[in-house]
Length: 66
Image (cartoon, rainbow, N blue to C red; front, side, top):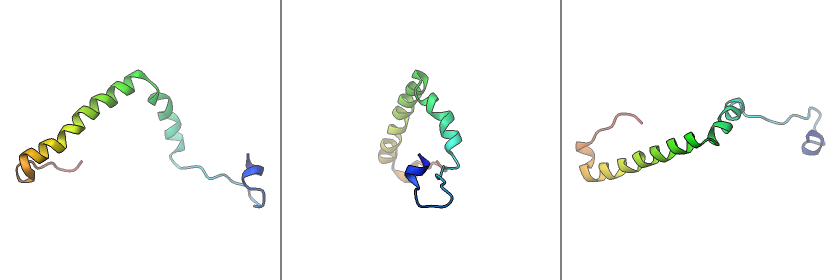
C-alpha cells in the first residue's frame, strides 16, 4: 500500500496512532457477548443520572468528577 499511498515522498511512511496497539487488543474484546451485556448495563445506569439531576436539582445533588 505504501507506493499507492505515498508515490512522491522520499520516505514513504504511513502514520500510525500511538494507541493503535491498545486498539488491536480492544477490538476482539468488543466482539464478545460479555462486552455487549456490560455496555447495555452501563447504558441503563448512565441514562438515569440526567433524570436524577433534573429532579433533585444541582444544589441537592453534587457529584465529584466524572
